[in-house]
Amino acid sequence: MEEEWLLINFQELVNSILDGNRCIQEPIEITNRRRDTSSKVSFLNHLLSYQNIHKDNILEVLAGIYRKFLNRIDELKENRITQVMMDRVNSEWYDPDYIFQVENPMPYDFFDTNNKNNYYYNNSCKMCNEIEQLMKIENNIPLRLNKGESHPLEKHLHSSIDVCTESIDYLEENCKVIQSIIVTLKDTDLTQFIDLSIKHKSLYLKLSGKNDEEDSIPENIHRIFSNYIHIHNLLLKQMIQYYHNLMHQINELKEKCQAMKNLKQNVTSIAYLEEEEEDDEEDEDDEEDEKLTIVDGEVQKEGGKDSVLNKLTSFF
Image 1 (tube, rainbow, N blue to C red):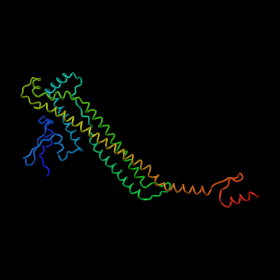
Image 2 (cartoon, helix red, strand yellow):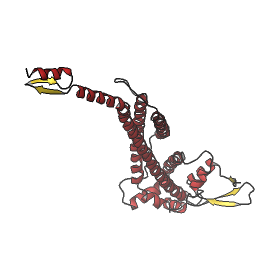
Image 3 (cartoon, rainbow, N blue to C red):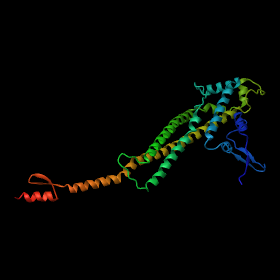
Image 4 (cartoon, rainbow, N blue to C red):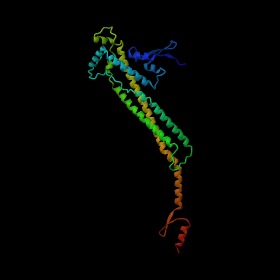
C-alpha cells in the first residue's frame, strides 16, 4: 500500500514563500500519517502531491503564485525603507530602467482560452478516428455509384476536415500568445532582483538609519526576492514545455487533417472505378463493331453483309 503523507496546507505553503519564511530551493520535510517516517520533497513535487494539482493544471497554479509574487513586490515597493534599498541597488547597476516595475505578461483570459485546447484536440482526433474505422468497414463492401451520386462518407470526410482545420487555427493562435509570453519572461532582467536576494533586513535598516526593532518590512525579505526568482524560472520552464506539447498536438492534427483530405480525394474515384472500366469496355466493343474501311474512295463499315455485298457488286 502506498504511503500516505501529511501535506502542508496549500494556502499556508504559498503564504510561507510569499513572506520569506520558507525557501523554494530548499527541500520540504513531510511525515506520514503515523508520524513515524519523514521524507523530503522539492517545492514542485509537493505541489503535484495535492489531489487537485496535476500536470495538466500545474502551469495555471504556478501562474497564480507568480501573480501573487508580483502583488507582493508591489506592496514592498510602497514601504519607504524598501524604496531606499531599491533605489540604491538601481543606482549601483547604472540602469536607467527601473526594473522593479514588473508587469504580468499573461492575458487575464489566458487560461479560459487555453483550457479549450484539449477539447478542440480531442474532438478532432475522435472524428478522424471514427472516419478511419468507417473507411475500414466501407472498403469491405462493394460500392457502385451512378454519376452524380455522392459517396456516403463524403459528407463525413468534409465535416472532419472542417473540424480539424478549425482546431488547428485555434491552437495556432494560442501558440502565438504563448510565444509572446515566453519571450517576455526570457527578456525580464532579474539581475537587480538577484542582488536584493542577498541583502538581509539588517542592511535595509542600516541604509535607512532605522533600529533593529523596525517591523514594517519582513524579517526574511531577502528570501522573498529569491523565491520570486525561482517562481519566475519555474513558470518560464513550464510555459516552454506547454508550448512544445501544444505544437505536438498541432502537428498531429495537421497529419490527420491531410489524411482526411487524401481520403476525400480518393474515395469517389475508387467508387467510380468499376463504372469507368465498364464504360471503357463498352466503348471498345463499339469500336470493334464499327471499324471503318475505305472501298473505292468511299468510307464504309468493315465486316457485315452490306460491306461484302458492296465489294462484290463493285466488280460488275
